[in-house]
Structures are given as structure tokens and as C-alpha cells.
Length: 235
Ligand SMILES: [Zn+2]
Image (cartoon, rainbow, N blue to C red; front, side, top):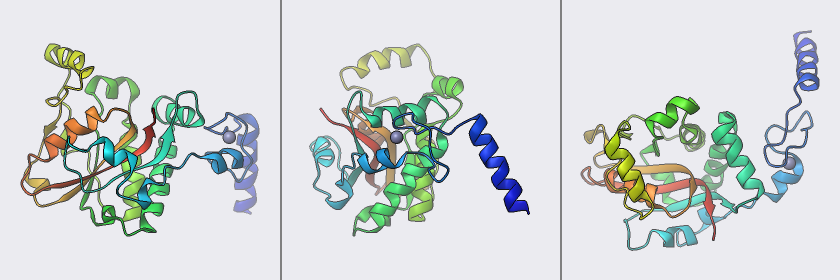
């Protein structure tokens, strides 16, 4: 009886507020959750998890030492992935960030990737001001999905972004030149000593932000770092 009532409520909710595909905006069928079947099949998967010597890993060569580098999707301007990321970042679709985290985790589990041996997952922190206006850090939810799938703990308390002030504004100007190395701090260095950290971000472009985070993480004793993103911007 309860199942019937639930299904009735679900279809009523769906009629009033139809769920839409976060890739193309079409109305979803009742069994579809985030993406329509067409978008699901067209997802531009990077397959980077199958090979540690991938294009994204090469983007970091000579900049910071990394154990393993991966990304779920490839990101192009104006593409379906841009839509997906927009929903995740600006339209409150934390659930989709968790979903993509799980998806990547499940793919990594099918390989012999060293990412599976990471001790702790750490999301790239969101700027305090942006966290205030947006209300959440999308990377936390991607981290959560990966953590669930890989059975690795995650924490947003280790790596922090100091609060905004004039010097931060100045530093952000330097951002254009890839010089952001000082804007992340380690709140608890001892918490990550001797650990393999998996740093996670939403979209990776030049890698400057990730590089700054990794530089901070590497200040702790005997730390190894891997990196995973929802999507890699290709250009
Ligand atoms: Zn779609």
C-alpha cells in the first residue's frame, strides 16, 4: 500500500515539477535520475583512469610530483559537460556531484590504479565568500561520491582557503599568471603525514589551483598526492 502511495506521490511530483536532464534539459523518464539515456551514452569519458600516463598527468609534469592523475569527463565550452557542471556548481545539484564521484570511483575500482590505495580524499576548498553565496562546495560532494565508492574517508577540514581580504584580492590578480601558490593553508599538518592524499576538483583547466593545493599538501611530512577531477578542459 505504502509503495503505491509513494509511487503516486512520485508521479504527481514529477508531473508538477518534471525532472530534467542536466545534460540537455529534456524531461527525464521516471527511471532516469540525472541524465537522459542519450546524454548518458554520449558522456565524453576521458578514460584517463585506465592509464596513469595520460594527457592530464602530462599537464602537471615538471610542476608538482603526483602519484596518479585522473578525470571522469572531458570538458569543452558549449558542450553537454558545461551544462552538467553548471547544474552542479550553480543550481544546487549536489546529488549529481555525488553521482559522478561514484561513477569515477566505480571505474577506478576496475583498474589497478594506485588511487585505490589513497588514505584520504581532500576537496579543493571553495573561497569563503563564494561558499557564503553558493551555500556549498560542489567538490565536497564529488569527494563524498568517490569516498563512498572507493571506501576511503574524505575531509574538508585539512586544506583550507584563508578568508578573503585585500591581499587575497591582490593574489587573485596574480592568478592570471598562475601564481596562486599562497592561497591555501594546511589546518592540520599532522593529520596527513605519511599519507597518500587524493585531491579532487570539479573542472581542471590550467591546473594552477590544483598545483597550489598540491604544493600546500606536500608541506606535510612524507605525503604523496594523487589528483582527480570531474572534468578536464581540453584546448
Ligand atoms: Zn539529456
